[in-house]
Image 1: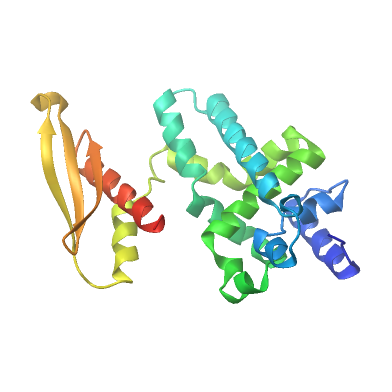
Image 2: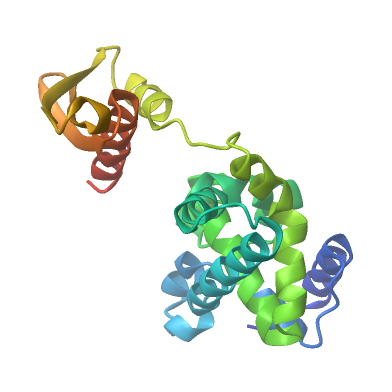
Length: 237
C-alpha cells in the first residue's frame, strides 16, 4: 500500500510518540492495515497486518518471559506463567494500545469503521502485537524488547505482586447484564480429595443453562475458572 504525504506525517508523529525511528516506514504502515480493509479491496492476505501480528505475539511472549526471568527470581515457573498470561491478555494489550492512540492509525474497511472498529479490544490488541512485530522486523529484538517492557512493565509489576488478577466472575456478570438481569449462580457439583488437599468442581448457571465448568483447589478458584470457561464459550458462539 502506498504511503502518501498525509499518511507519512501521521506515521512520523507515531514514531516520535514511541521514540522509534523506522528504517522502512512501509513496515510500520503495514502494522496498521486491518484485514477488513484488504478483504474489501480484494487484496492478498500478505497485504494486511495478520502475519506481523503472528510474529509480534511470539516476540511479546518472549520479551515478557525474559523480563520475568531476569527480574523476578523468586517467582516459580507456574507464577511466571500466570503473570505472563495476565500481562499479554487482550484487555491488557488493548489498554496500552489506547494509551498510545493506536486506533487513530488503523486502516480499516468501511464496515469495520462504521461499527467502531477503532475502539474494539480485539482489534487494538492485535494491532499492538503487529506493531511489536514491525519493530522486530525493522529494528531487531532489543528495540522490540525495550518497547514491550516500556509499555507493559507496570502491568508486569502489578501482576507479579498479585494486583493484576483478572476477575472473570465480574466480567461474566457485566457481560450477561447486557442480555438481561437474571442472576448468575455457581453450584459446587463435586468435591474430591482429603480435607487438606481438596479439589472443587463448579458449574456456572444462567437462565437454567450451564455456561461453564471450573475446577480449582478452592471454591473461589473453581468459580473463577468456571466464569472464564463461560466467557470463552459465549464469545465463541
